[in-house]
View 1: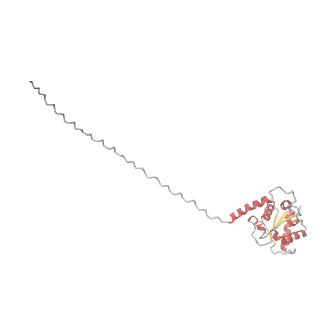
View 2 (view 1 turned 90 degrees about the vertical axis):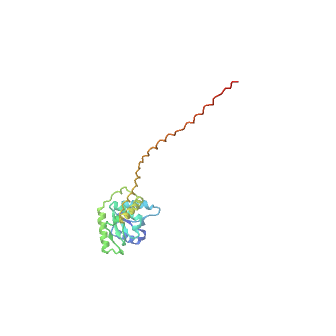
View 3 (view 1 turned 180 degrees about the horizontal axis):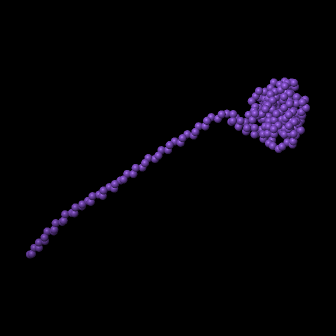
Length: 214
């Protein structure tokens, strides 16, 4: 089991080497990815070392704050109360790590007599001494933590932006009431007047027949 797991971005490897060698000279067993051997799977070995370490030293820089892997390793360390962060550049850390006490080694040249380095080593000594070695508990994998970090990034962005006031929904347009129906009483038409049909005049009686007697 390593005392310290060193998490950093590859762009900060020169600074990471100074930190690793300084901690080794102080008597600590330090694991960082340069210890990987050919044929080993990066994420499996890294995850095992990360879970077993008694302290996780994270180097925060402009590059590492953008690294999903560094942020995932820092998140796993924080969840297990193993995180010991260092600022190596003046940068804005992920929101969830802003409240964690962080050593300031910005501009450190590797001088072991630098008081800031001495203070950091003393903090590491206290931290490791208080962390009893124990079997690594089961938990989310680094890959799962990377995915969770992406979700947290979105939440952090939402929390860091002041949301504009929500406008009330527009009032519904008034619905025109139907015009009242006016009932009109239609009086029935008067019955037609009776038509008087004149009777034809009577025919005159036939003339009398005169019989002639011979």
